[in-house]
Image (cartoon, rainbow, N blue to C red; front, side, top):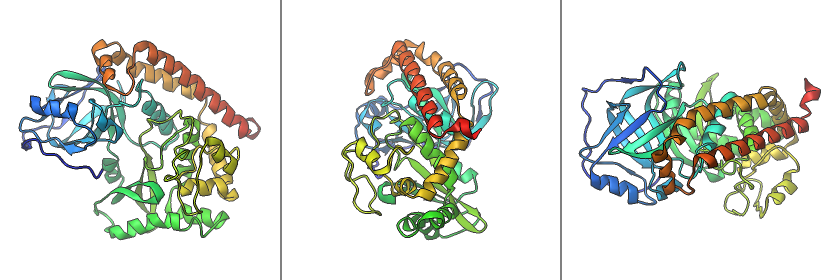
Length: 415
């Protein structure tokens, strides 16, 4: 997020004549269209490895033929910065109302991301993960596939996701952070409105989660964590990361602060599931990644991870919190209890419904050749046939992993 801000024009200030934009029907696909000068369009296409605010005297953003009151529109992301199809962060002065699906709920949005999915060769990974996380009560954000255009030229399939930094305001939270490696803080937003706690108090409470890891164990550690973090929610995320084989998540999670009994307690928002179905967790071959609260840790292979934690249902131990949960018998027992509850609500039928929804949502996009041809600018091109094959493969894989987890947890014996 600490990227250079490039100015390529004069930002057009939006006037107060704009109206809130409400979507009353749910068409096959919804369209955002960005209008900028030809020079800005070419700059967006060719710029690499740099995040910046789009500043252009003719900038306009239209949603389903209605112009929006744009406060700021930024090029965002990490790896997608190196591709023609960029990802965007959008802030509006007035909200839009987007319907989840025909007959579904409406979500009011003033801040959202338009994610290009350039590293997801059939556009399904984030949607699969978000759907499963939502079923488990871990993913609270609004999300939806949309089309994105620049000056009338389609940019292909995009994934609209509510900005976590909008969501935390709606929850009455004053502070949100994105976790970094070694329990650092990559980015944070502080906006006192209800409790007016100092930002330093919020940061200290987050740091306390990690301070206690090497100092306490067993039930005392569990109670210390539970008072500072919704540990059951974190357990559910870890269990689903194991199911999904999430290969990169240490810095892909937000912590937002809530006040409970006059104490700060964090809840989480998972983020960015491009790297699911990975062979190895992120710590393999990355000596800089694992936390150091329990000493230096290095893993040259996935087997090295398994040799340390055994056949536990934890995919990654890169972060010290996950490592502590894997290694502390009391914490792991509580984690397994949460997994049992999770597995009783998640089964092959639920996965089947998810994949049917995913097919319904993406079919209109894959039936449009011009949109799918945009994948030629991505890491790996896609096609209708590739998409269908990958959908079937990943559905079978998840059903098999789910069944394996249920057997290991002896779910049938617990009914």
